[in-house]
Image (tube, rainbow, N blue to C red; front, side):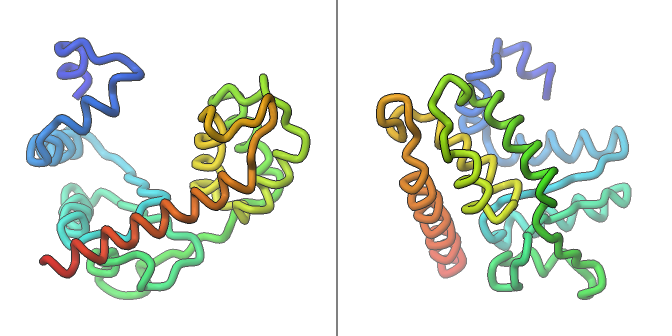
Length: 186
């Protein structure tokens, strides 16, 4: 995949648009070729409930070279992970992770503040609000910081933390609705 990216001149910021422009079959083939060449651990964190098609790909990855695939669904019941249950032989293979410990959550938050350039903004109350609202879930924490970097969530140099939380929850609802619509069409 790196060779393909270099050949097409894709750099950091253009990766997402390049990825969206690729055919699913090509991306699936690239992942399968990569897994066959070396041993990997695959972590899928902070994803919408898996569709049947994605669950099949994950199951195939598990079977190829015994590649462990970890679906990180913190505190989720079976209904919240969609067809992910189809990837397990039995319930003993399912691992439910607890939220991060306080120190690890704070460390991740500081990393996100640097990564998304939030230090230039007034962060009074932001850190504690994000830690509290995320429940120390790393996927939620990262996504909230990513949203905080967008100018529409700024009021002068302050961050509209409550609006970020509302929009984050709305995006989850949108993803779940789209997944449910996709299931009905299958």
